[in-house]
Length: 487
View 1 (cartoon, one colour):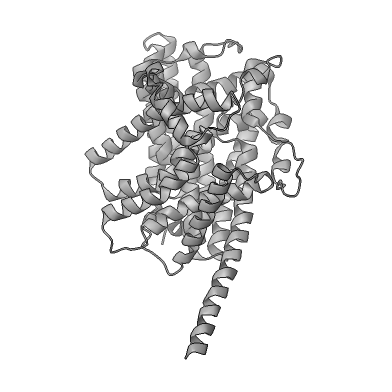
View 2: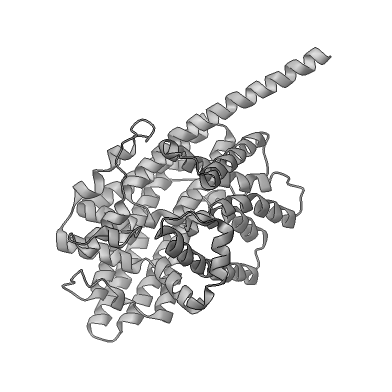
């Protein structure tokens, strides 16, 4: 039984924060005396952040959910992203020259970055602590890695088939699901999660066959998303493959190879994405995936792998976006109406409000960066992530950061506990996988979508699983009736 107390969590939180602030004070002191240049100071800042996250993760009791529950995986991913950012800074420098000219900075950019990273660090630790205390002793149930099959595999089969059919009709045939868009998103997430559990359904099968099964199930979903030009949509179905590969092969060299291969594939995909956006998005054309692939292969001379890696490094390293958001807060002050006013509307499904305005917080943030006089039509689909915790600060300062970080962690925990008690175990497994993936993208999310998304996920999960339960019970009764009549 996991022993969890508020006192112990606060103590672990204090250790992590104290370590981080001590390191930051030392860095600021050395930087002010010019004993450290900006590049080395930024590298040290990222490594200190990673160490702070590790301290909290290392001392919290996680039980079997040590590597894949929402809170633990968020901390581990934060460690990984900070190490990646340190490596990116070592190779490509501080990237301070890429700071937008439309935003003036009163102090040094390094000082701005340090303040932004402090805000992110505190918000992240507060959120995880709130989630950890909320789930309490039920934490052991929020793992999916050790899945060994269950008696209700039919739920996973139905969810996968539903997602396959809706993605085909939506992406290939072109059926307009605008009124049911939230439902389509939920089906996509639950369908991809089902790939993982279907691949592991036969515990006696060899590990390589599980990988092949997951790959085959993911392939059509990825193909359907090719003409979207969105890397996330294309690669999301293969997340179960990567997870199975990671847990199957624990050798350090193999895992390092997995990381390097994933980064290379992700970087190379930039060629395809750039070509798709230039030829399909800007011309507003529908081009088949085969034509897009053919065009990309014939256009690779315009790019190089080094350029792609540089773009991916800038994309994954969140330092710049955090600093930009803080600079906007310094310039414009706090803007709670702009940040939080869209939350109520997001809770109303489009099927109930067909004329609901489309909220685009990422494009709104681009507008703040470019200035109020900028024409967003010039940047098309450009969308800038403010950074989840920096957006909370932009909306309400330290109070906004503290309240919403704690509230979001609490909300995720309460929803996971509710699903655990109200739905079949397969629903908990699916939702655990979904929250595992959401930890990857949290920093790029916005508070309006994060709050409404988790609530709508919960409501639609209740709806979907209850409908599937009714269908499966009806099928089972029909079989029993048929057998009874035959006998």
